[in-house]
Image (cartoon, rainbow, N blue to C red; front, side):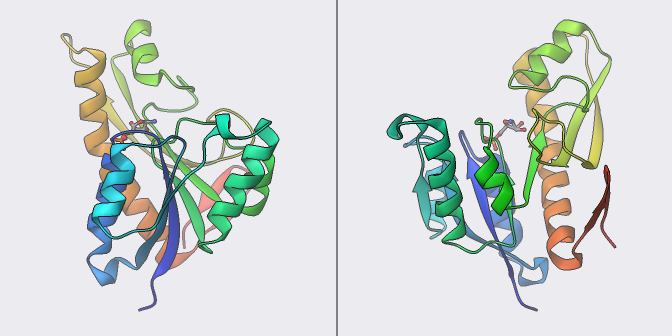
Length: 200
Ligand code: GRF
């Protein structure tokens, strides 16, 4: 079976990335992490990639005269590895029009969208007092966590949950969901009709 190349974008600890790297050690999974990109140097995510022998790149907004220049550079860095699609796995920057025009991007979010979009989804869900939250895998469009939904899983909120304890429980399911979705997208392809994503 040929392996589908993907580029993974990270900002933090990279446990989602690690789940994808680990899944890829089984050739039947069908996915090869061709490169890992980060929005800042020194992330654990980048270290995990290097430990696995995966090429990395860093593309920092602050290193470019404008956000548009950063967007163009990020798109070019990604394109150099010719991925079938890109996975945003805890990447904490909004992607720009050049990157989104050139690449299909799959994102994972720690809430049941359209509830609690944005960078503080777990905190916002706790503050609202929901009894059930979860995780969403979706395609990225120009909005903030607004793209067509591929998969969702629910997580119950416990009475004594903190932001950290809830996020850790969400991430257990988030990793399983991401590995499953990325593998199916790579092996089976997908179509998008309006907001409906179909993996045949
Ligand atoms: C995930 O919950 C992701 O949805 C959020 O940040 C977390 C990333 O975790 N945006 P990690 O860096 O992969 O461990």
